[in-house]
Amino acid sequence: MVSISDPKVVLITGALSDIGRAIAAAFANAGYCVALNYRHKEEQARELSDWLVHSGHAPQAEVFMADIRNREEVSAMFEKACQVFDKVDGLVNNAGTNQDKPFLTMNDEEWDAVIDTILKGAFMCSQEYARRYTGSAGSIINIGAVTALKGRPIGANYCSARAGVLALTKCLALELAPRIRVNTDTPGRIDTEELRGRYHLEDQQNKARLEKEVPMQRLGTPEELAEMILYLASNGKYITGQNFLVDGGLFMR
Image (cartoon, rainbow, N blue to C red; front, side):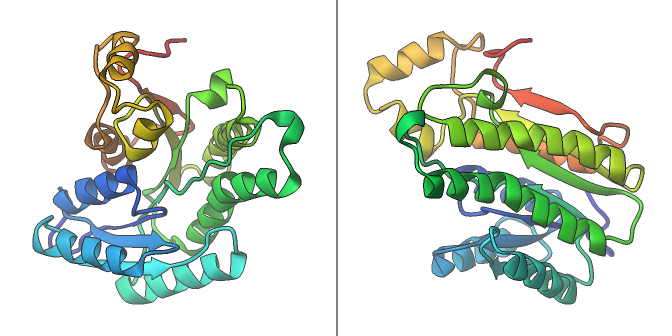
C-alpha cells in the first residue's frame, strides 16, 4: 500500500483493454492515483475512472485522451497529468495493436501502424515520463509478448515491435538507473477478448487444447498479470532491465 497522505500516481496507456483495466484496478486497490490513457471511447474511459474511485479504492482517477503514436499528443498528456496530479511516479506502457498479415503481402502502413503503437509509443511515453520525473524511485513497466522471443507466422510487424520493446527495456534500464527502474512483463495465454477471438475459444475443444499445453493447465487472468506489474512497480526495488514471463510455465527458457 502507498501512503494515504501522499499517494503515488501511475499512468497506464491503453487502459481500456482487458489487461489495462486489470492493471488500473490493481494499482487503485493498492492506493495509487490512476491516470488512464485512451484513444477512443471517452465514455468508457470515464466510466472506468468513476469505478476506480467509487469501488476500486483509488484516491483519484482521471482520463487522458492521446494517440501515443503522436509526439505532441504524448507530450500534452504528460503535461496535463503532471498538472492534475502534480507528478507521475510510474508508467505502464500497455497500449498495443495487431494488424496480422503474411510477410509477403504486408504493406508499409500495416507495418508502421503496429511498430508506431507498440515500440515508438513506448519510446515516446517513456521519454516524456523520464524527462519530467524528479524523484529517485520511478518505474516503467513495458508489456511484452512471448512472440518477441520465438516469433510466429503472419505477425512480422507485431513480433518485431515486441522484440524491440525488450531491447528498449534494457537500454532504458541502463540509462535511467538508479532513479528509474525499467522492466518488461510478458503475458502468456491470458484470458482476454483478443485471445478468445484469435483462438476461437467459444469452441470448448479449442479452449481445452490451449489449456492442456500450459503446465498450470489453465489460462491466466488479467488480474494475475496485473499482480506482477504492481509488484515490480511497488516492491521490486532491486530489479531492473528484466523480462518476467507470466505464462503458467508455457514458455520456459
